Image (cartoon, rainbow, N blue to C red):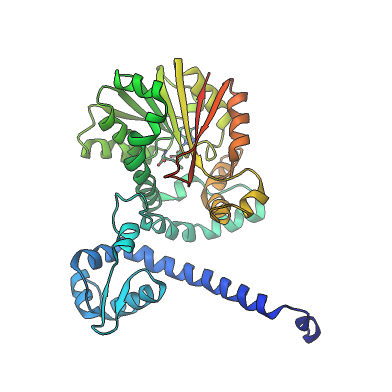
Length: 362
Ligand SMILES: C[S@@+](CC[C@H](N)C(=O)[O-])C[C@H]1O[C@@H](n2cnc3c(N)ncnc32)[C@H](O)[C@@H]1O
């Protein structure tokens, strides 16, 4: 660009934008440091053991001191850990601990960083998909990605599923208390049903997912929780049919991911008992780009980037629709109506602005 063109620029805007970009580059670099922290339990070590200098922390965490010092310094500059210059000690505030250490907290987010190494590992495959179409198959995402995702969605199941979500549908709540039947479609590593099983001891619960490693993880989770006799998980592509009849069928963060959501929703409808309910959780995005640009939570780019890295892309890899993360309510209504459902109620929970919920009935 020539000097004349430069003189037409608003340099204040250029500075502001350049520092925004630099902030994003910093976030990418901090991503690797946070993923490593997750692998090595560094935040836990700092929070649990209390304030420490970098040599003290290195011994405690079992890592090289030079790396401990650089990691702690980066985290302190970034506001992920606290630093006291007088004692040269690092620590974690209760708020940092709530978001980065406490795995049961509704704001626990370190889990999402655990998904990032996989996104980077897939970047060549994704570049090819940009050039030629197709996608990156689900199997290329692997255990670290899926365990990260499981730890992320688990917190909402733990804190809200039995406490808020089901009671917001009194009929469903009553049926489950009386020993109703539940199928969780696209159950992933199975966490939702474990919390439902504990909250509704009389209910019969089954999870379906067509990704075999997820079902293996789900069954292992049920056994570890002592719930294997109450909760069962099966490898099944639900577009080929759902055995049994259910009072409640759930899809948690599944519809926009499904390569073929239309036949899946038809099968879900066919598998509901009379008066049964299909309960859907989706991310709180709009189907409309401008509305996502203006998103009140400022999360539009999170939606489209997650979609490009995984949600849309794994569906396109198998010739699916590739609806993508920003499905929006209107599309959800259309899909439900096309599947033959006639009742559709959106439910909002103020304590969970990141998701939207739909109660759908025949
Ligand atoms: C984003 S994950 C959600 C996992 C879980 N519900 C959670 O919230 O942690 C979507 C899941 O849907 C599953 N899925 C997609 N299409 C499916 C189908 N046709 N039949 C069964 N499972 C399917 C995928 O294998 C994946 O595990």
